[in-house]
Length: 256
Image (cartoon, rainbow, N blue to C red):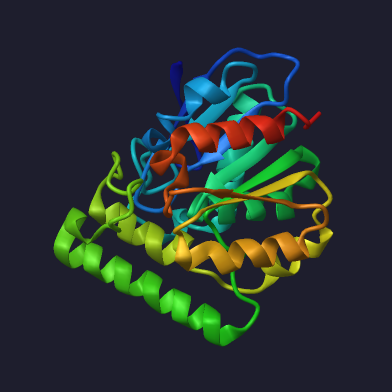
C-alpha cells in the first residue's frame, strides 16, 4: 500500500493505493460519513489481490485537509476530487463504490461522469429522496448532526462500526454534514433508471434503515444485483468482512 496526497482547489486530499495495475478494472472506494479510508482496512487486501484498489478521505474527514469554509464542502467538489484521484493514478475508468454517504457520492459520480464508470457498488446506502418532505427530514437530520458535532465534539459521531475511524476534526465534520451529507434535489434518485453499467447493491441483513432503499435501487436500476450479507449491520464491510469481500470479488470478476 502506498499513501499519497493531492492538492486541488485549496484542499489537500489524502488517498491510498493498494495492489498493482493489472488487466482487471480498478476499484475506487468511498467511506461513509464520520469515517475515513481506514474503514476499508479489513477489505483492501482481499480486493486488491487481482486489481488496484484506491481508498480516500472525503473532505472534512480523516487526513484530507480543507479550509473551514462551507464553499469547500459540496457534492460537486467531492465528485471532482474522485476524478482528480483517478487522474493522478492514470485510471481512465474504474468500478466506483462506497458505503452509506460513499454510496450516494458514487451515484453522484455516475451522474456526472458516466464514461469513467465501469461498474457501481452501492453498499448500505440510499439514492436520496424524490419528494421534498423526505428530503427535508433528511436535511434536518444532517443539520442536527452538525450542531451536535459543534456542541459535543467527536462523541456526537454515529455509533455504527465505521464511524470514528480517524474521522477527523469535529468542526470539519460539521461542515461536511451541512454541505455533503445534505441533499438538494431528486437528480440522483431520478438517474437510477438510466444506469447501464453492472451494479451491485449490497446491504447488511440487519441494516434496517437501508434495506428498503436497497430493494428500491434493485427495482429501479436495470439488471442490478442484490447481495444481503448475513449477520451484518450498517457497516457490512466491517461486520462480516469475509462475506463482504467474497460478494464484491465475485461481482467484480464479471466486470470488464
